[in-house]
Image (cartoon, rainbow, N blue to C red):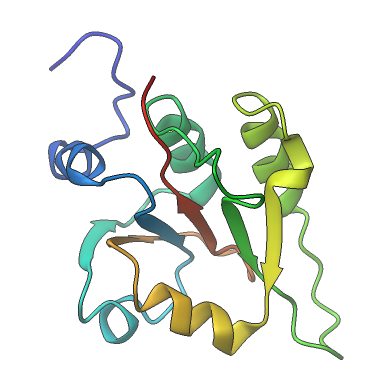
Length: 145
């Protein structure tokens, strides 16, 4: 155990977050995301039983967002015609706003299949048990100053 580290962050996840460098991306995926097939070239970390908002808040305590890009946070865009609602995005925006002055302007929405393609280049993907749909979020790491 370490002091000051959120208990939800496993030793393996802490190691991966530490290994990541500036510009590397991290996907925190909902329970429907094809983590193993999309993440064939990434480190896939299991976080079953945990939701995305709790992990996001804990990760953002340690993980700087990239200040050299306009939108270091990406969400999977709702497919046109899909009537799904995304109230979980409001939780994400609150969490990011608490640590980044850009707030909601730090977010991009990426078309579903483009999100999958970008996720294939991620350094790591966290597979959660999140049941909300369109709950996938991608973070681009910045520098620690």
